[in-house]
Length: 275
Image (cartoon, rainbow, N blue to C red; front, side):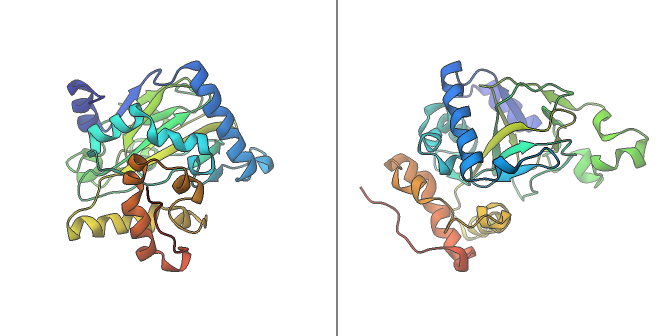
């Protein structure tokens, strides 16, 4: 167990968690270097002019060293504490952010099963683009859900801009920190420069029953690389699969299989590596 009881209670209650200094300076140096190479080599980072967000999906899958984040005991430990040891890695995006993101959730699900780990590679504060969250907004019984109110409508509803909604929490971070939140949690960022570097890892619960598998498949329709317009031949790159340890393959197996069912036209048949 990596997270203590208080951290788990906090996360389940409020829908987010900030883990400071999870990675040391030497670690975040190579992570940043690998991220930059991915955005420049596999993404459209070289064309980024600050006029709009530049994004690539997936991110860590294009770097053999970044792939090892799925082997890191801290990452695996946190995800296992929240989702169970048989969680699945569900890809993630890499970004040069520009401007505000506005309030949004990454999905609404019957029960809490999808989380996002966010790695910010530049120092960010409340007014320079850090992640802001609305505590408890992931809960089905929260005001935002029961009243069907969008924080994007704050100016119309209450006469205040979205950046001034009372009760939001700013997760100010420095490189090496980790921000974690449920997909259902309303989040946003405001202010900041035109090249804010951040990448994510999406992680979901393993599906066992037919309803759970249907939920996994629906997630794949909305969140896998091809759903964002990036066709890599399947759920994962060959690099992610070919360099995987047995433990990592355990985290890839279900979505590797289900992707072929959900996106058959965009899946190149290949078996999982064997040991």
